[in-house]
Length: 208
Image (cartoon, rainbow, N blue to C red; front, side, top):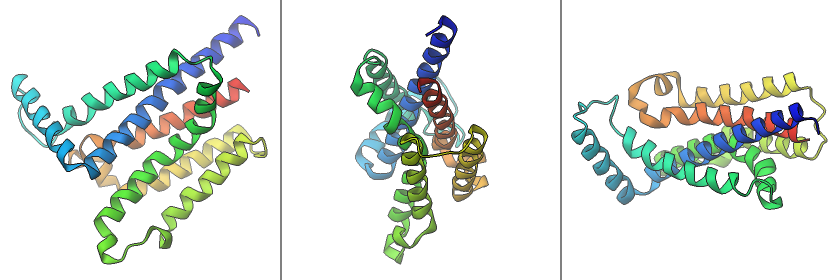
């Protein structure tokens, strides 16, 4: 393999490792906020103490950022280090190629489905009756076809599909949720997910 091509493959792998680590770490943190009241309370107490120590004014714009990003970044760093120092093993390559794509495309939808179910199941909401669930299933089928080499769509077609997928999920969250401080630090989760998907596509294309 020529040096230039090796450098491109290496860069693609670094980008994929980085965004994969951030994506899965932020998804885990979002689920912690959703399901673990005890841990979330402890993280918000830490957030309050850090803001008070740094003399940061308590506002909706800043509230929860330390609670989400500090442990999320530490978790992402641990995942990244594990992947980076084992990047040449068969196990890690197996994780980065198939699992990386699945996580990149489904972490955000899974969070939305879990959050919606938690808030609405008592009123009869069932994910099996929601179009969002089947959109995720369709995307998973596309991922498996792509990984199996049976997906005959040019790169620009894949890009359009990815943008449509994330456009659909940005719409589920709502423009107001994504663009206002009310949504808190979880706002970045869709952006990291999109970046992770694009990095995965680049990695798979260069690795193959």
